[in-house]
View (cartoon, rainbow, N blue to C red):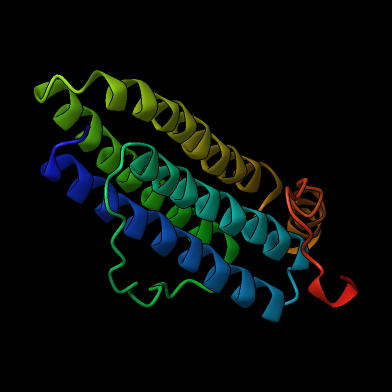
Length: 172
Ligand code: OFO
């Protein structure tokens, strides 16, 4: 059984994960609008990953007979229209999410909540991957350049990201 404090904190995290999904969906729309459809696809896959992160927390609360609460999701905020600053935003967003996940682990340790410690370890590991992906893309941009053919190639590469769900809803 979870403490109310832990249930509240996980519900907050569910909101944050859905905000992440919403942010990446908005970024994907902007990149598609600008013609970077490969980057748009990468970000759309990321949207689905974030929804999975949220749903995994929902499942955990329900497994622990805790109540899932739904708060308002803020409108996604980003101004970047250029690829490099956009991925700098992705990286700093993921660093903030990692800090947020660590807070849950800190609370679980303080409460001697061993089940949540084990559960949230998955997110700790996942955040290493999330930060790594964004950092690697930024490194690639520095190598190929944030314009012209280099960016075209990067756009093609990122468009190869394997979607875990169908992305072309018109064909379903
Ligand atoms: Fe849910 O990891 Fe990104 O935000």
